[in-house]
Length: 418
Image (tube, rainbow, N blue to C red; front, side, top):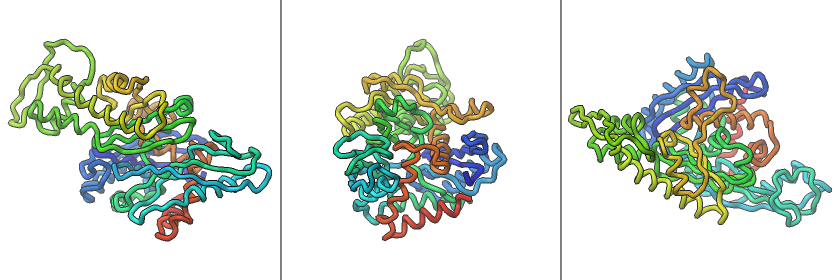
């Protein structure tokens, strides 16, 4: 490892989170974090550069104070409905008697040779599986014998202008981007286990403005997308139904909201109306407002997952993000999906002094960005889901060189690695 610290920066619609990890012992150990409220981002897109810059600066300063580390560069999470996931395919002859890393690089070069519009940029090229002489479903082809190697991949692209505006805010806040990472890929690293990845899992990060979806099967990504639905829709319904301000509706949702469950029908809660009048309302009103909207959001997510994946689909669902904290949301999702659903919280690499702060679904992406950065820099693993992804990203350089994006990204990683 050439760097002592790895930083992940999760820039969301409602919050910005910076996570700092130390790698001296050969494994990442999270030693600090910082958060700040976000209001300059809408559905993953920067709508106010100055406000977003100030929020990033505040989160970074908080993380620096927490960890004692000066933050100059980070792995930046990217999401938003501008994200697209494309299928591609490549094939090459196996030069020797066994598949080598060179053969894998050539087949990935072939799979990466697809048209990408000038207003888009590639975030990831991820193998789903490899095929040797017609035998598919191969995860690690290195060392296997054959004459022809094929690869099925998923290419994740993003709007160039959206990414550049996000990075501009980071630079103005004093943070350079080592790499940009699609957030569901990061979240999956912190909340999904190997059994779930093998049998099939949909990792759904429901934030304030978007729902980020990553579907995995046999260890590889089979679909990724971002939907413009999230917890803010529930907040809006509460604000309208109870005649509250957005700020008060968000507070009521966090402190008293629930999507499913039984409570005392006589239980009352205090709310402050837009007229500044303090009033008591029955708490069960919240369920009547929240549950229909929560079911609608989950149904939209289910249609996306079922419509873009195989007939069998995932065998389970992991919910993360701030909306996953809503009491009963997992039970609503189980009823809609008809699958086991659990709320995913990050655990790996978190020191004991940060357990209470970071073991929450709202920090799944921030912790996942650190884990992604560690894997990319240490090349600790050799499988499809881990080290090969980092290696594969370099194979897109020939395709992207025409508009300079590949050169800029490689230069940025090289310059900031020290």
